[in-house]
Length: 340
Image (tube, rainbow, N blue to C red):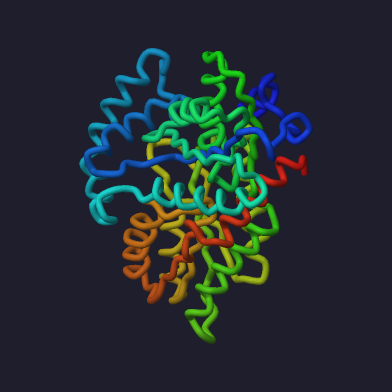
């Protein structure tokens, strides 16, 4: 998907050479997964996720994908609703994405007064294609796509790029695009991660906790296919974890397929049984708070850890709309403009 997108005639690898960002109207579109804002939205959100053949491909998917997606989402809906109820009744992902976008606009507008911000979600409102239409309506002639995923994966950035590609191929708009495929290894991002880890470790005083990096799992088959996500996660953790006593694990594994591991829950429980009482968890593939941090780690993992003997588990704070994070994102956009 990444190479196909790069080769499109309306995708500019060096936009600053052919577009005047100081004078012409343009925008930044933040790409993210999306989530149900209320419990009433859970069914539609799950259906959209299970309907995406890029991340879940059922047998005879060209015929059965949507019926099976409807069946599975209806079966999972009650359990997922209960989880969202424990974190306030909905996902805060859109809120944090919009706040981050506002921070980036404040930074960029100092030099680029014509810039506009858009937030496009893959599986719930505001949808990516609708935001593209809004960008056209605002008079934007170029869009820089900025995924809120540090690492590239077909199941995250890739499926968002597919939506943009489909939109380009079916519309008459001449709006051009450029994009930032990943930023997991940028020094600014690594520095932010290490600040968050230091902040968590300092809560233990003289005691040195075990640092557990937790990334969202992907099917082993996807990793074996050459998808760069796994290798980027490994490198990301090596850079952020240098000097700490750390492990890499993976969470959010569901369904009867083989997933990359080791599993976060099993690892933390094993640490507890081994007598390790203090643990810091770093959600390495998540930059904003949502169900995987607020429920899966803060509630489920903490409970499982305590039952296994871990006395204290601290999760690093998400970056959300931290001013240093939005400054970093603005720098990424400016680097793309200047062709760095």
